[in-house]
Amino acid sequence: MTIDDYLAQGGILTTPSNAPPRYRGELLRLMATFVDSELAGSAGFAEVINDAPSLKARIAASRIVLEKTDHAERVLDLMGTFGADTARYAVHHPWAARLTRDAEIGASRRGSDMRLSVFHSPLQGWIDAVVMNVLMGRAVGIQLQEFSRVSYAPLADVFRAIAPREARHAELGEEGLTRIVATEDGRAAARCSVAFWRPRVAASFGREDSTRFDTLRRFGLRHRTNQELLATWTAEMDARLPTFGLG
Image 1 (cartoon, rainbow, N blue to C red):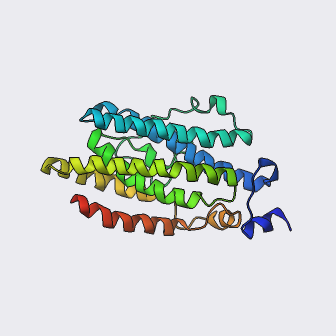
Image 2: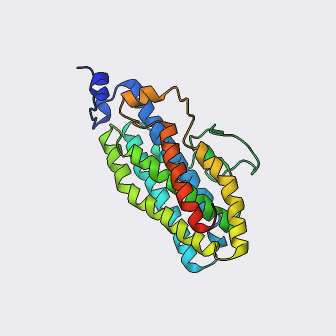
Image 3: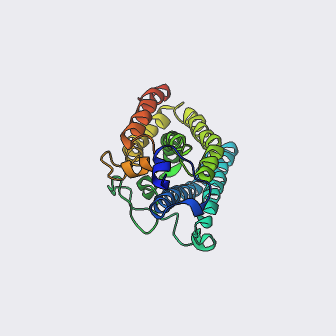
């Protein structure tokens, strides 16, 4: 049986030496997208820590920044086993760089890193950051469920280990949003942020007509389509946002 047939039948790889070239390329692309998104996300959130309205909120925001950076490092260490230059990776890109607020880029990437498109948009203050964290936190949870099943066992193990902490980030966001919507002004500001971030987070799931999905599924690196993942997230948002008066 060839490696390709083995993977297509649900096989699992455990070391870089077993990975065929095309598989290695797709796996590294997946890992780079996650690492770059975590680093860009944590860098953007770090800039609003001092906008938090209480010490408890600042501690929560700091925890999110710390743990997202740690998650990036864990996956980056695996990239290093495939030959990635981990020593210069973290300082190679301006992770806090953003486009203008009104830039419309859909699902496309800009610049030289692999961050998801949503992380090209800037945060505007504390309420905006909390809303973005709630929406994107749920998206990350869905994506990690998918990635926890990848056919490269060491990476699947890392994703399963960090999934509970990423879920806690989303919970911290919802706790903060609950306090925000307790006032009419806060609820109005949150509605504006939902209108801005919801389509951008939706775009982060990728194109519905992805030409690479069949290859990724054959390699065991994907199981559900972008459209299926987006539908799951949309259903969650349709159920959760009205509980905050934001439906």
